[in-house]
Length: 272
Image (cartoon, rainbow, N blue to C red; front, side, top):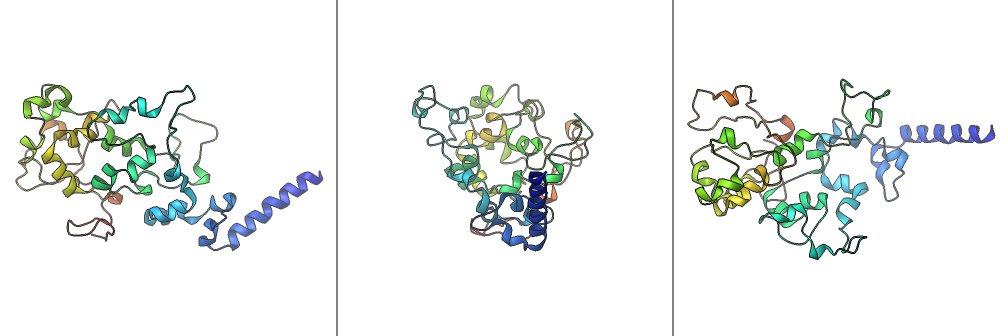
């Protein structure tokens, strides 16, 4: 009984502290997990404005962790290729998932990924429905990543809607491995979202179709392709093809906030 009273007293104290302490105190030099769990930065609207630097105060291990030089079975990483290393666009040794999306040379050159691009908070009240259900829960596991976000760069190459006889891996040579053979004139509004660097991607695409295929099918995680919004572009035909009948005409608002202009440096961004 005395242990039970002690446990109740402990959690009551933690609850009082979490209410009294200001938001910024929850992730200090020695963060308390129970308090940090309820930091307002994990909830809307703060999560939409959270910077990588703020997230990494508590989650810096995602960049500090490195792959093992050798597996428990004795296989050296230098003697084996991970699946993401099989494309020409990946350079260097094996690296972790988060580092590949944030700090590797390709990520720095072509992307402007943020923690909040994928992670939309971690509301403890919405970690799992009770009792468990397979559908209709009314919320998502916020700490998890919505598969639709990954699908934007890791979906299947839709060669059918592109008018190609087969996947780019099989027919790319017919076009000189150059996506810009067609796309220099088609779709002049591309990649204008806040987690990519449009100008850098365009320049890389002129050098090799591998840069385009790296995201559009080359690193496929899913069997379906992403239904990209059809943003209007100069000279766009008024007739909408059948495959685009139900497509949106605008990207998600959170992917359009704080857009960079081509003249801005890679270090700062501002609202549109």
